Image (tube, rainbow, N blue to C red; front, side):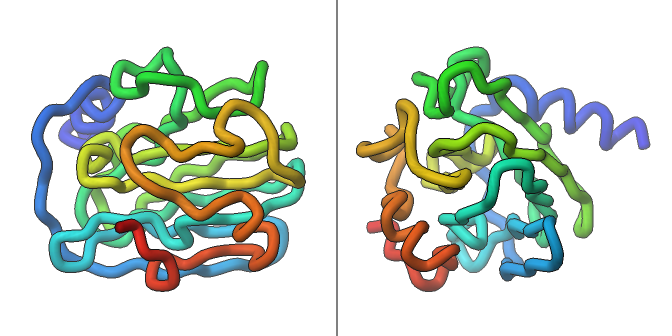
Length: 170
């Protein structure tokens, strides 16, 4: 238990380098909670889905499939985020680094708009994603995060979600 607490603490600060991990990720939705899986396949670490539409007030569960990952909002209060990419006035979220398969972090998205987020250990490898709550809006709308590509908000609205396998990050 002490090891987990130390790693979560480290996950909230800047972590240099990257880790090559293995595993897989899938989308699972049920009721008013949607699950975003965090995993690695080959040399690619990713969120699945990489783009997700939720209703205001909906809770998203981020679940660890393999490796060490976090779900961290692009917000200037976090040392790895160069800019805030959340709707104005929204409190940022950060799971810390989850290390065990099946570990989860939940966040309820109450405010409409576009939310971009990343994985602390794998941001430099392009492990980023987008959630649209209700309708697009805010500083993330109309542009891509500085660390890679995510589906456009319109594509997310049109499809409800965009799985990692259906999105070309190149």
